[in-house]
Length: 172
Length: 131
Image 1: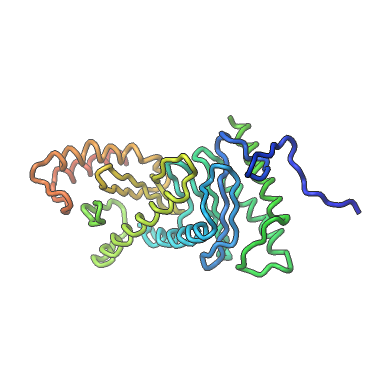
Image 2: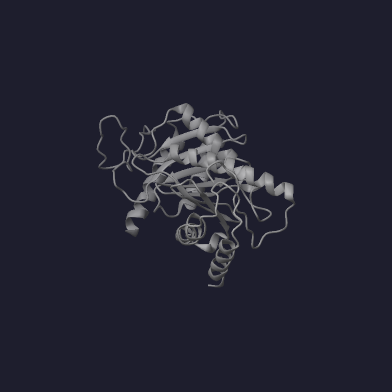
């Protein structure tokens, strides 16, 4: 059986201090900045930065921000002038956009990206599909527990981010 | 305003809510926006100016504008309404400033009771809805 080596993207330079990833080149428009996954109680179970200019915060900060976002999404639903609103799905700021996807089981996937990013819901759905394939079907994974880094799931995320970046560039 | 007191509340197409519910809503709105502003500042990528202008759910979109003097303008619209930044800026610069800031009888920090402001605001927004 051939040994399975992790796929190396072609032509990636290793910059000092930042691990080599296909989508790290600066100045690419519409890039995905980071991904957060929250469990059913609003706690952070996974976080990944995809771009060098994503906010640099320590782990506790990320935990706090992710839980805060969960609560704010719920509050927004309460403030809704129309009945039957979902929680917050899209947040537009000057420097970035944040798009969220809630699964029927209560898991929340949200990404931050540069303001001109398109098709983020397709990206979120792809991430969800890979989550259910590589995280949920792992017999050692416990529900609502933090997801381990460095496995097949992370490799798939790299591919998704690469694909997204390629689509963005093609549109330019 | 800056302290979170409600200066003006207008609704144009919303199911009726009781008095007490409205007061709670307003307090909740202020707390919500305060936390959201902090979140956005923390999460902003390096080199970005921070500050958000909109957030949406599946049923509505909340447009937000904060003036340099600390007045917050919140407009809830249908999410197909498009970018409301220019609208809110116009409400501030051309309606609010004209009727209130330049009005010697207006006391800042107090609820707005200027009828001309409300009339002007209503007609401006109704005009937009027509389009």
